[in-house]
Each structure stands twice: as C-alpha cells, then as structure tokens.
Length: 404
Length: 225
Image (cartoon, rainbow over all chains, first blue to last red; front, side, top):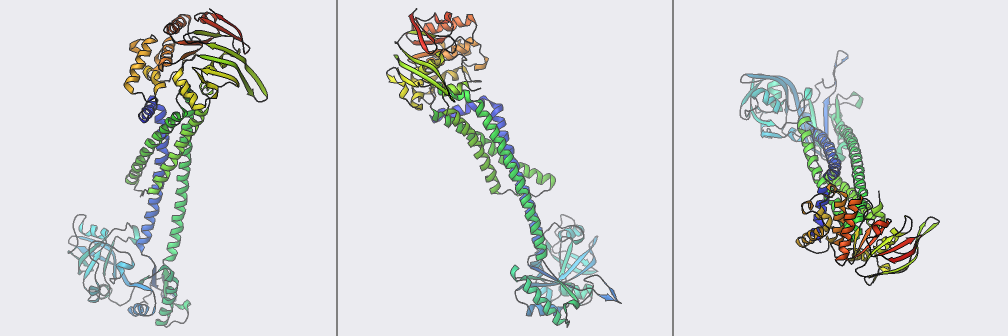
C-alpha cells in the first residue's frame, strides 16, 4: 500500500513537471527571501552592536574643561587640569569602579626602518585594554610593571603596523622610533574596523609614564576613562566622581568646573533605539515576504488541486477509497513543500553568503528564521494542498467528474 | 444479478423538486446485454449513476450481486465499484499525461496485488479490448478517440467486474469507430460478461439483446431484441 502511494505521488508529480516546478519555485522564493532578509537584518544589528561594544561598556570619560587664554574660551579639552592625583582620589573615594585608565594623547612622527607615519600615540596604563575593550591579535598589552618602570614598549594598531611593516611581517619584537625615542613593539591589536579621523586601528599605545617623560614632557593627563561595575551604578558613580574632582580641584560650584564628565549611557540609548528600529523594519519586511510567499503557495496549491477535481472524481468512480485519495494529495503536498523548503533554505544561505561577499553586508542567519519560514510555508502548502483535495474527495464521484 | 425495486430519485434545488426517476423496477440476469435508451432528460443517466453505485436512490432498493447497494456507506460503495463494476464513460476519463498501462492499472492500486501481476493483467485486458501492443506505453493524450475508449474498456475489465456499465460509450466517436467499440462490447458479452449500455441512439442500442426504454423517469417499454 505504502509503496503504491509513493509511486502514485512520484508519477503524479513527474507527470506534470511544469506544475510541480512552479509550485516548488513559489515555496523556494518565499523561504529564501525571508531567510536572506532576516539574515541581513540580524547581521547589521550585530555589527552595530559589536561596534558599540568595541568602545567599551559602562564607560565614563573625564576630560579637561576648556581653557581661557586672555578672556578667549578655547576648545573643550584644551585645558591641562587633570593630574595623577585626580586618578588616585577617584580610585580611593568612588565606589563600584572596576577599572580606571588615565591617558595622555599626542600626535607624533613614527619611523621603522625606511617607513614612517604620523599617528596618535596614547600613553596609558595596563587597565586601558580592559576599559576600552582593546584585544590583541599578537603579542601582549603592557603590564603594570612596565607602566611603573616607564618601559619603552609599544602596542600598535593593525593599520599602523601595515604602514610601518607591511602586511606580511610580524612587528612583535621589532623596534620603532616615536619622536626619535626607540620603543620595542610588544603587541598588535585586533582590528576593530574603524576608519577616518578617530581610527581605532591606527594608533600606538605606550605606558603613560613613558609618554609623559619622553614624549609630552609634562605630567598632565588628557583624559580619564573609567569602567563602572554595573550599568545601574553609572549615575551614582558619575555624581561621586564629580564631587571628588570638585573637591580635589577646590572648586565650589559645578558651573565653574574645569573638567567635563561624559558617560556612555547616552551613546547606548541612541544606539539601541537605532537597532530596535532596524529590527522592527526588517521583521516587518520578513513578515510581508512570508505572507506574500504564503499566499503564492496557497494559490498554486488551490489551483492545482481544483484543476484535478475530475481526476479525483475518476479515482473515486473506479473504486479508490477516499482515504487513499486524501493520503495521496497530502503526500504530494508534503513532497512539494519539503523539496521547496530545503531548496529555499539552501538558496537563502547562498544568497546571504553572496550578498556578504559582493556587497560587504554582514549577514547572520538564525535558526529561528529558518524554522519560522520553513514552518509557515510547509503549513500553508500542506493545508492548501490537502484541504481542497479532501473536499473534492468528499464530493460524490459524479459531481467531481462533471467539475469543469 | 441486478434487481431494482421501485427506484426513485428526487433532486432538490432550492424550493424546486425534480423527479428524475419515478419508481423504476427491473431485473437483469448474469450474461445479459441490456441497452437502456431514452431521450435526454429521460432519467437514464440518473439510473446509470445509481446502477454504478455512484449515487444512491431517494427511495427504493437496489441489489447488485446480492448486496443491497442503497444501504452502503461511502467506503463500502468505493469497494463495491472497485470489485463489481467496470465503467466506460462517454468522455473516456483517462488520467491525462499518463501511460496507457498506468491508466488501466489504476483501479488496482492499493489493492495489495503485486506489481508484476498487475502489469500482466493490464496487458491481458488491453489485448482483450483490441488495443495494439505497441501503444501500451504511449501517453493517454497521444491516442485517438477509439484507442482511448479501448483503454477505458480495458480499465473496466481489470477487476473482472460482475457488470460492465457503458455510459454513451460512442457519444464522442465517429460512426466507424463507434462500430468497432460496440463490437468490442458485444464480444465481451459473448465471452460471458454482463453489459449494461446507456444510450440515446437506437442504432447503438440495437447491439443489445434487450432494450429498456425510459421516458420521463418511467419505463416505457422492456423488449427482447
């Protein structure tokens, strides 16, 4: 019986290749478009999230206030008001601080053998790697000891490495000259994909003391980066830091403060509203694709089965039981949706991959989108392949035979 | 073999009742060749549907080979049609784009008979119906009208039915082919099959041994030919 059923299904589907092919095509397109669409949506969302995370999380940044020279206000951050005492005061008096990394920044000419470049040099402490989410591709970030002893070591970004040493060479262990001072390269950071003015891949990190002593020539700090333990503690920590700094700087009112405190919550809330919008947008596009695909499958199945009402009538007239007619149409619907579904999933993966390769979109296919699109298409295909067949099989054979 | 007692069929369409059959009774014995003739609208098609267990009468009883057909449910009717009745339709009703062999074997699917036996039986029936051997694997839509009707006759024979019901089998055929098909039916009757033929053409009805004439849902005459 079962063998007969399978043979009937194969014959019936092979007997009308165009009809079967078009039905499968409808299912393939429905599923593939949903998978690709959702894949690209989630990929973009993920890449935005990684970029935000690469800044660091629960971050508070302190910058010097603007300086007045002869009554003229200079740009923010131009004043040199932050010192190492501020750092120790914050460390001692403010709760919930996970890590604190002061930094000194400056632009210097850097040379290695025959190549040279001019880029940003950040003098900082070993905590910086954690605070700013700096990870290393090779070598190590400098240690607390190297910071304390003003070691002349440097960690360079991948873009800097490329300009100085080319793409092939391993810079770890080689020497570079920053402002004519010889440094040994001890690590290369992982690419973060930044670009332009604030490129996080074109940068050189050196221990803070080393930078102050050999490059800047003074003890001032450009800014202080702080990681707070939890997101909830951010507001309290920010207020405490402000109080401590006002006290150490002997300033009475916040209006006169010679520093500025910025926190990352503002950035995060903007970013999450953006990713939220993207998610809603793409989910609705995927939803519409699924709906359109579903209607397509439904149409195809309804037409196909209605067209075959006479065939159903004939089968009944020659004595095939209703049950077998139902089973045959159910099996045909399942076969079509299954072939279409699997092809659709494969095509979805291929399309996402091609888009990633040729349009450098990031794509991330989730199991749930595969299951959802496959499930909905299969359900629609099976219901609308089976239901009208069942209705036709319930007709009297004469009515079904007369059906035009 | 066949016994109809006071068969009535009333179609209800909204408020309008149409009496298609107004109490028809007759018997057909094994081995007979009977023509049921009547003009269109006489109720002969309705009678044919009831005889073929495709439809059930509103009132009256119908016995086929000892079974009371009017009391059977849908599945039992299917089984009865498969085991006892062979149909030959006016419009052939073959599966489109399907080989001659598959068309003939169609009633045997799900019957549990194994494939080689089915094919053997199908060949036998096709030869019996006068089909050319080299056409056995042609697709149904590549055949001429006469060939299609031969395939339909072969299909009607595949289950060794108790009766063969032919509903206007020559309705879509030219005169020459009609004769061929009718001779094929006649031959089946000569070999012992019970054949019931529905037609509106006297010329076609003449092939039978007995002619039942129907008019306005009633038997007008029942004569041995």
